[in-house]
Image (cartoon, rainbow, N blue to C red; front, side):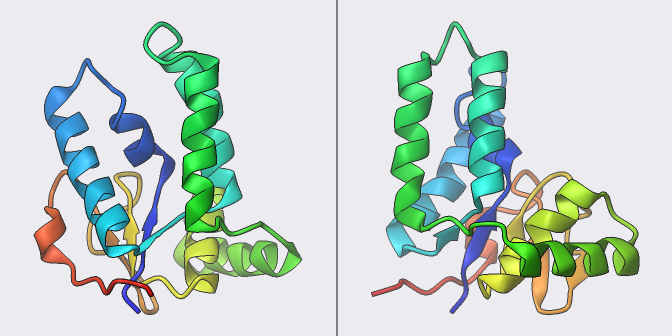
Length: 150
C-alpha cells in the first residue's frame, strides 16, 4: 500500500487564506488522499493542527469548525503514539539527526506502513528506509503513486 502521511503544516495550509497558492496545493494533496483513501496521520498531528489553527486562524476558523475538522480526520484512523512509537522516534532522531517532534511523525508513518511523508519541514526526497519525504510545494500529487484502500 502506498499510504501518504500528512504533516501538520499541510493541514494548516489548507485554511491559510493569506497564501492562496499554498492553500490550493495543500487542498489538492488532501483531495488525493481522501479520494484514494490513502491519507494517514497521527494523534500528534491532529493535536498540533487544532492548537495552531486556533492560534493562527482564530478569526477564520471557529473552535467548533476546527474541532469538526479534527473529527473528520478521525476517519483516517490516526496513529496513537505509544511507547513503541517513542522508541522508534528516538532511533530515528539519533540516526538521522532530526528534531524529536519530526522523528515522532516519521516513526508514526513507519509504524503505519506509509510510503510517503508529506512535509515541508524535512528535506524533499529525504529517505527514512522505505519512507520518502515529499514537499507538497515542490512536487504535485501526480508525482506519487497511491493505491485506494478498500
